[in-house]
Amino acid sequence: MIYETAKEWLEAPEKRVALFGMSGLGKTHVSNILRAGGGWFHYSVDYRIGSRYLIEEINDNLKREAMKNPFLADLLRSDSIDITARLRFENLAPLSAWLGKPGDPARGGLPIGEYRHRQALHREAEIAAMRDSPRFIARARALYGYPHFVCDTSGSFCEVVDPADPADPVLEAMTRHMLLVWIEGGEEHAEKLIERFRAAPKPMYYPPALLDRLWKEYTNDNNVEEGEVDPDDFAIFAFSRAIRERQPRYRAIAESRGVRVSADDIATVRDEADFNAVIADALMARAPA
Image 1 (cartoon, rainbow, N blue to C red):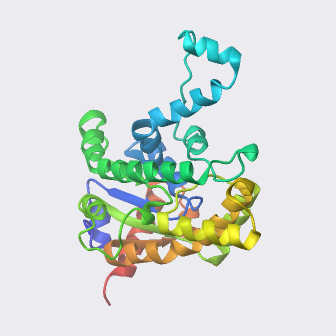
Image 2: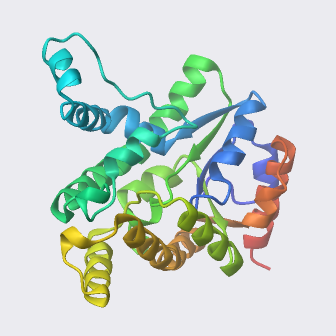
């Protein structure tokens, strides 16, 4: 780790962290607090995925939908209008809309084959976006003079790396430049996240083996064919399973390459000083007795 002790962290003139954990536990919230303080560059992996690596796919998806409307189709063909996504840190809806959910097309679902294809593209984009993060550390310093850097990873971070591989290229690249910080939630947090997801199901990335297992289990248990699947119901089912399957992967990354902080402690962070104290405590907790 680039900071081994609380003293090293607190005295470091350049602090660099990568926050990881389930979406909804405070990664982006804390990143925004640090950015607002003026000294931190906020690198959003999800924003980089959408704005750099999948933007053509996203825009093509919007145009494909527009072409279903004869009025808009004529204007698109004559190059009279432009339809492009407006991605922002706080609004990644175009990326989510492109990723989609599998199931009944009448309910907004995608064929499972197309869904798997988009999942594969998302995986490639996420890996590339994370491997870009060290370069953005240098850019943030050289272009804007930011001394500190926070990498706000995607919730699927643990799914596109191999925590058991000491030579995993993404983890190697990140740990050489940043302190990996797991925002750990307990069972009560998991239940709250599932309830929140149930109210507004969102597209997610799943590794291929897990997606295949969940898809087979859902269709068998509900005795439905591909085109009969309720996209939202499957998304809720899959999320409730994935959220718990990710926990040991997050834990393995933190134990071998980083530190852990509780979601409750992160929720108390109000400024940079609070954040520095939370990280210092995590480094002290990791230190051998």
